[in-house]
Length: 331
Image (cartoon, rainbow, N blue to C red; front, side):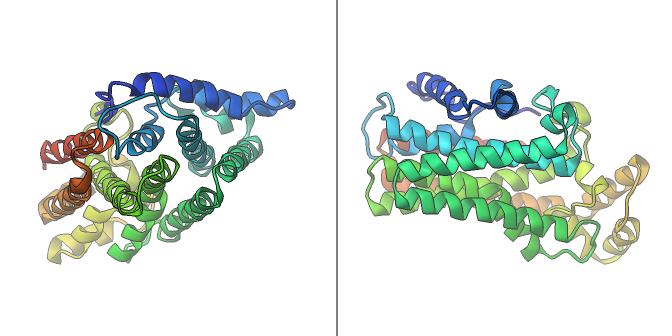
């Protein structure tokens, strides 16, 4: 169930993202050619570039129409994407992933140590660029990197733990997913020279969008097929990562007791399918669906003060696209 870029309709974005691609490759240039090759590996593999797109579009949230993004806006987008890229290198090491974006993962191709160091290199480059954009952007990006680490640690802390709480889950996805989208829109507002009210509203949009997006992904992991997802369905439960629908299902009477007895340890695909069915029976999918809709609506509402701007209307269209995606879920 691959998703399209939610901002693909923005008229000037394709050209701006072409500039992003070139600047990304320039950002990882170094006289250490092996390091440059490793650091450029996933950049060259492509991607939707959602976070740079949000940054660039947010910068136009006080404009009546779109124009080519200023250089500082492009560099803000680069800084955000480099943080995202670096986190993927680290994620693949932790997951022992063999592929990423249809290509061999860095850890599989060069080894875990090289992947970790290249990920650190990307975070370092992102920090350098952020520093060139001013102390506020530098501080924001540093804080976001800390939040990414916090969110991931919170997830690892509760692997195979049937007592994981909703609070732990929400703090985890706020750190590992929503914080970077919030940073993308906030940095766009800052480098775009927007007023503080718009910058704060864009931050709310990015965070709310990220929370909704992650909850939708977690629902799909339990409801979609392998073919729709492009990866094994129910894989979170196999890996011991219990997301919002599973946490709520485990608190649901008799069904919850059966589910708790099944989980709490590594399971095979037969147990996974049984667990998915128990989650369906509990009504937890519908409950999580309501939360995703609420966060998506909050993202839309945050943009009301700038609905007449080019960037605001484009981001609202992206939020509306997410709301539609929520409503299309088959539970």
